Image (cartoon, rainbow, N blue to C red):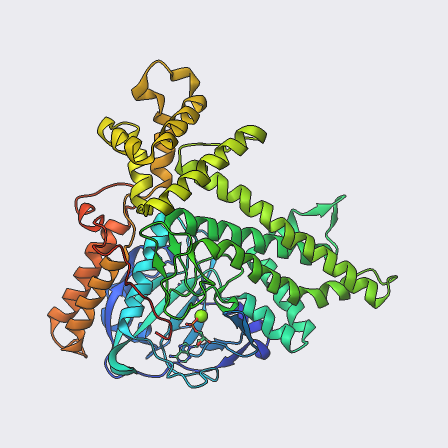
Length: 530
Ligand code: AMP
Ligand code: MG
């Protein structure tokens, strides 16, 4: 594993140099072997848990690491804060993974930085474990996500109203370039840094813009390049949110500082999974007006992309036709970005209905009347689920099973009435050649559904009961002096993770985690400020 630090080359205005705070008694609780393998972490290091706890707590820096806290701004719940930045995270550097993708390695909960404001720079154990579990679950489900390499208990108490055990997470992400990073420089009128950030982002995430995208065999103009960047960032966000919707994920805090332009899921603070289908569902205690509700996530990502577009305006104006007046240049830039932001709506719709089509066994959503009909089929099902308060994951799973299970089919027929028959008619039209043989008739559809509808998700009540076990055991043994403390945490999390890592195929212990919450998650709340 070889560290490089390309972000540092952008210049001192992009970060503060700062070291993690040393901790008293680090214990490695979770280690992500599969991820470590993909990052080429040598076996001798992986076997040395003492060394890993030193690295994973920030007590010791790996060779080549240069610890920095990144500068960024952000809109939080619609309100702009020109200076946020990593207040409790230290970026150690980047490594190339097995696919030659550059990944950031960052510690979170590793102490105060110049951006900490009033925060203590720390992270409590439960949210650290939550981030590890949720990101692994999302990864296995196929949603783009940052991941966790390790969770290390620090042996320290931190104050979160109540005292809690502290921990440090090692986070691995395609990058930490946020919409808020662009906003930081835009707010300061620093167009040189903005342009450098666009160039860096293109090189790191969208290199095809400079290699493949040509007009009449000429490289793109500066203006076209910026627009291509915005368009690529938009495509990533659409893909991200549609994947969240497919699996029933509610991010909970889609502020622009938590929106990375590489389109990965970042920051799992108040996230939750949708149980009972409700497009307006919100679990986060601070999301009073439902800004980040399940069904609002697509619109919010568009809003966030419009904020990215705002930042690119001065660059577009600068790159514009010099024959135009300044006013004309600005107008042109505005028209150009507005067109892309408006296109988002149609692009999102296509991705959205294609995704739900697949969840219902339709490989293609079709065109014209067929598409209209299929879209109606999808929205009617969602409306039915909303009024019937059906479990989201369970419903799609039962629909999948019903294609080869008569009892399930009858059950759904009585629950969903006409809709169920309409669906079967559409499916039969998709596979007309096998009409004579009912069993085989829906095979393609069922295969597709099995790939798109999880059998298990990280349900909120399961996560919480696992976190409770872990918090209780560490509260009695903060420094993990007893072997059993680490063992209970590792084994409790691992059992759950084993199931979550097979989200489309039942394994022995899957059933235990398919059980629905007794109260339908009615009283479940998640919190920021973790
Ligand atoms: P988050 O809610 O984790 O996305 O954080 C939002 C902002 O608050 C970021 O600038 C964080 O670095 C900062 N922040 C969150 N928690 C803390 C903390 N305990 N200490 C210092 N800064 C924090
Ligand atoms: Mg954040």
